[in-house]
Each structure stands twice: as structure tokens, then as C-alpha cells.
Image: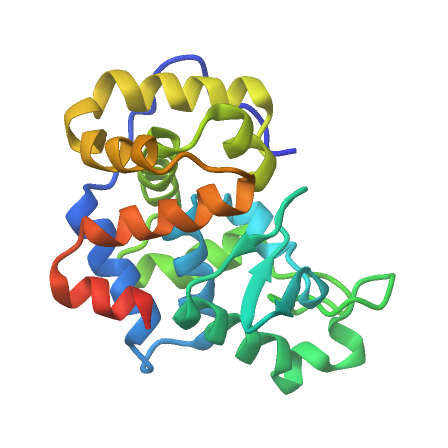
Length: 222
């Protein structure tokens, strides 16, 4: 599991407008490297730690009934189409499929490193993101605050691999510090209570998307 965050409130938070602008760029800017776009989008949208992103394998990415899912922990996450496309392109890239870029179990790393059989390093991944304005810690913190404001702590923990105590602290921080900003999304979730984890994640993505401008919403949903 991802290590617990400190008990104090996170000191570095990317502002929401900046987070969505960077996410839009990751999803649409073909001038960026494919692995940089995919890693950036995963951190900006789902709050995944860079160390978690770099250890993802192609076998964690699946298609079912016309949708794509990423199994980060116990429950697969429904992916927005543009992000799904990036990850599938990455999984099918020649450098990903090569024998030297696989795990000991033969699973292809989505983010292979320079050392045969090993994923990219956390430093290497972060150094690719930073020139594009994606500082992984503030970006991850902002995404987690937004997620924690809409999802119950147990659900947050189960889909992202967070320690339960970590998820509870993020939920507490979101409710006390971002209550006004998250009110619209929380109200939407109350009006449409989730019957299961996947429904909750799908509605979360819809609520998150509505917080952007109309142009950004169209981009994220495509």
C-alpha cells in the first residue's frame, strides 16, 4: 500500500485551475512524450504516487464492454476515453512489448526503465514531468483532495491502494478545507448514491469534469 501521509495537513497543493489545465494538456498535446502524458494524467486525475505509477504493468489495463479499466488496487477504475487511449498506446508500444522491459513474471512495464527488467525510476519519471509544469507532490495532493471530497474514505482506499487511515485523513482535510468548493460535487453524489464502487468512481469523474470550463469538459470526456 501507499505509505500514509503525515498527520499534519498537506503543505503543497496545486490550484484546481492549474490542475485541470495541465490535465487537459496531458490528454491532448501530442508534442509531449506519450509516457509523460500518461503518467501526468494518472497523477493529476487519480492522485497516484509517482512510485505507484512507475510500477504499473500492461496486465493491469483491461477492456470490458467497450470500456477500459485500470486495476490500481482491489477495484478496477473506469478510465475516461482519452486517458484509456494513451495507456493502450503505451501498452502496445514496441519498447513496452520488448522482452527486456518485462517484469520477472513476464508482465510488460507500462513505464520501462533503462535497466533491463526494471521500471523507470521515480526520479526519472518526475524529471520528465517537471519541465511541463507537473510537480508530482502538489499535483497528487490536489487530486486526492478533490477525490476525497466526493468518495467515502473506504472507497478511496480500495480503488487507489491507500492505507485506510490515510484515506480518512484525506477525507477530513477535504471536508474542512475545501468544503465550499466541493459542495457541488458532494451534493451530486448525495442525489445519486452509489450502489457499488465502480458507480461511485464513474459519477466522481462526471462531477469532476463539470468543474472545468465547457471546453475542458468536452476534452476530458472525449
